[in-house]
Length: 188
Image (cartoon, rainbow, N blue to C red; front, side, top):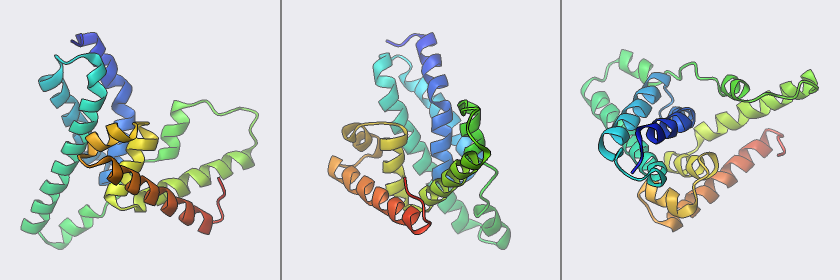
């Protein structure tokens, strides 16, 4: 059984990554924040009594379900209220800046030249842009496997699909990203 402290530490450790993952999915800062907050509350309310080692998988599954629920609500909302103002707000990308977030969470080498910092920043922007262009299931599989560092079985459980599907989605995502970045002249 997880103690209150273990639960709080776990939630604190996953909040930023969960937010980034949600922003990649819904492309809206406020909605992503709501999804993460709802997921955290559901984990604490319904599964706070579970052992601490079960919390990561439970949270990933809850986060995926909350994201799917958000898309369902958006689909219903858009079907009911389809006027030009709704279309404009549905396409709003928000102000989320991956580079600012990465810079705040790490200390770049101070000896690094301005040119290499600029090159790295441009590369990160290109990667972020290409990740957002991936189909939803490929993006989810890619982020869970390579961002959240879940193994294939854990990713399959979080996505509610087979391990073979996870491998297929990840492979397609990696190939699509590599091809898109190569087309932009970026070699990793």
